[in-house]
Structure formats: structure tokens, C-alpha cells
Image 1: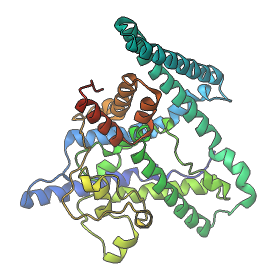
Image 2: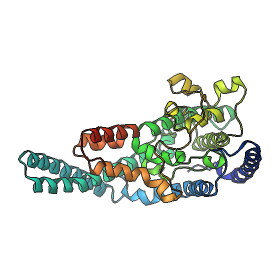
Image 3: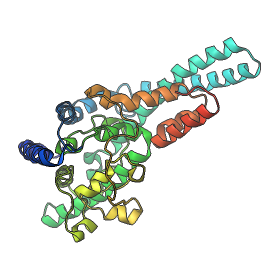
Image 4: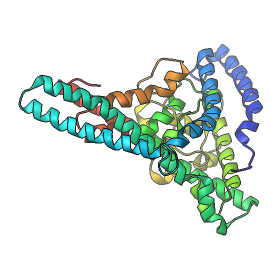
Length: 366
């Protein structure tokens, strides 16, 4: 376990003080320029704050609940894998029976087989996904990787901390990008994009389901000799930096800073649902990763915040789970394994395109 102080928790009084200052500044601006999407709205802000609290509690609760299910470690690990394999077999057989019955025009038999596949397909995806994510969390834990990397110990000096911050930032870019490009990861991250407003409270609208993802492990820095407490410090610095860029009150930094750093302007683009802004500007502290890897987009038209299909709710539970619900609905109504897995691992855009294909073909959509 790391003994590092969690900088994001220490900064909580600063969060509230800065939000108050931003609220007053936006209120003053609205009096002369009219309302904007940066303004605070009571229910929206309340939801963001509740999700922020949830993001602090979830890492303390979910790993403990899931530990017994971890393959190779937990007492229910084998049972979980067995359930996943069994549900996969049942679904595969049900698919085959349904296809054969449809060819022979045995409608009732085909309908029954499809119903079985609906249930078992969802069960296979849920249990299989849980087995993979718990196993991945286990094999990439900081303690486990530090055991292998401590012979390259870089200490706790300023150069080690700076290098860890840059390393974390590089991993963050790819991990963040993956959360936009794979739907089961998007289901975790979509929480942060669900607000149709953009102010400092939006920064606190954080995911609560990280335990169900397979992130590029930041703990891989431990393999390079960075101590877990140094990696934790890098995490805190990274998250604190991201906080202040969730604002409309700062329009732009000096051009040289805009070239290198992630700024409020760049991050407003990231939160935009405009077509040209989708899946752009994934960086955290540095924007150079986006410039290097082809995902940079400047802010050149007014940003429309939120999702391409907004959920129109402030209920925290719905905010946290709506994409999972949609994924499982799509999986339940799929008729092949290729389609089921595509709904899970491809980007959310793939699902929307597939729905349109089915509609154009006159077939029912999820």
C-alpha cells in the first residue's frame, strides 16, 4: 500500500472556494451578457458533486466486494469462470438451434431458442467481463508490479516525481483515448461527459465504475522503478491539473502555452458533442500527445456540451449506469457472438451505426 497523501482529497476546500468564485464571476457575466452553458444550475451541480463523492467511495468498496470473484485468487473465482464458460456454451447452442429452426420455419422453436440466447448471452458477457476485469486488476496492482521493479528504484527526488508525472500523463492519454473508443470503457467514462453544462463542478462529476474496466495500468510505472507513493503523487498532480481546465471563465492562455499544455479551450473541445469535436483532445496536462497522435482539434466554433444522445436526468444512479443498460440491451437482442462482442468492445458510434443498419433493413433495433 502507498503511504502518499491523496492530493485530490486535500484540495477539497479549494474546490469549493474556487467553485464559489467561478459562480460569482459567471453570475456577474450573465447580468450583462446573458446566460451561458457555463452557468451553474442547481440540480446539475448537485449531481456532479454527488458523483464526485461516489468516486471517492467506490474505490474503497468495489474492490473488496469483487475480490472473492477474482480468478486465481478469490474463492468464487473458479465458479465465476465456470459460469462464463457455461453461459457461453448455452448461448452458442441456442444460436445454432434458432438458426436451424428459422430455416425450417419452426417459429415457436426459434422464438424459444432466441429467448434462451437473450438471457444466457447477457449472463456470458457479464460473468466473462467480470472475470477479465477482476483478474486484470489483480495482475496489474502497484504492489505486484513494484516487486518486479524495485531493483530499478528511482527514489523520491524531484526528478523522479517529474518523470513519473510525465509518464502518468502519457499513459493517461492512451487510457483516456481508449475510454472513448471502446464502449465498455465508455460506459465508465460517459459519466464525466453527461453534463450539458461546463464549469468547475463538472470536473468533479467522476466515474464510479473503474473496477469494471481494463485500463492501461498506471502501475506499469512501478516496473520502471517508480515507487508506488511517487506514482500516487503523479496521479494527484494529474487530477488537480485537470480540475481547473473545466471552465468557460478562462478563454485562452498565451499561444506558446496553448501549443504545449492542455488548456480550458482545448478541454472544452473534448467535452463537445459537435461532430468535429467528438473524441478529440484526450490529453491531461500536456496537449502534445494529441498533436503527435492525430487527435488534436482547436476550438473554433461554439461548443455544445453533453452527449450526442443526452439522457435528460439528474439521477446519479441513472447517470452512472445508463450506458451499461444500453449495452446489455444490445447484447440481449443480438443473434451472433460477433454482434454481441462488437456492441461491447467497439466504440459507441458502432452501436449507433448498427442500429441505423437494422432500421433501414426493416429489422427491430435494441
